[in-house]
Length: 164
Figure 1 (cartoon, rainbow, N blue to C red):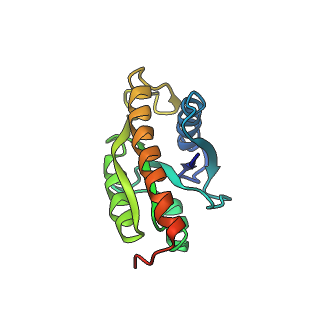
Figure 2: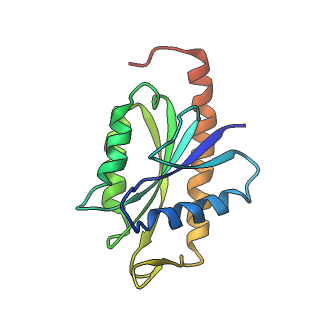
Figure 3: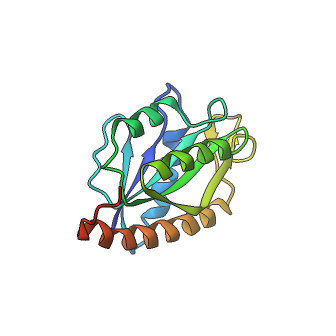
């Protein structure tokens, strides 16, 4: 069985990312096709097969804290899969696109499906996370792809072929 991290991608005080990541993690508990772990970028470990990045959108990009954590490593990310949950005024889509560019350089296979949460419709007063009911379906569609790619890439890592 593959292991997937749901990563909280913000370290700001009063961040919304923790509530969003915990919601995603609650949905993962209903699944039996992978093991999921909720991790904070402040103290995560990387012996995992795939990742779900929960990222805010700050200034048309991902958070500096998440980008710094990603940039600190390189080979540890290689040949793994990634999915994204973005949130913000523009549903975090620019932050996710920013991360997709970075993932390509790190040899991470990012999946097509993503979750886009709006501060206007999925949060109450921009602070209290209350996702629309259909968002759970979006999470599961993204997780299906992350699990499939994470499993496929596990064999590649096991064979230890050089890909760089």
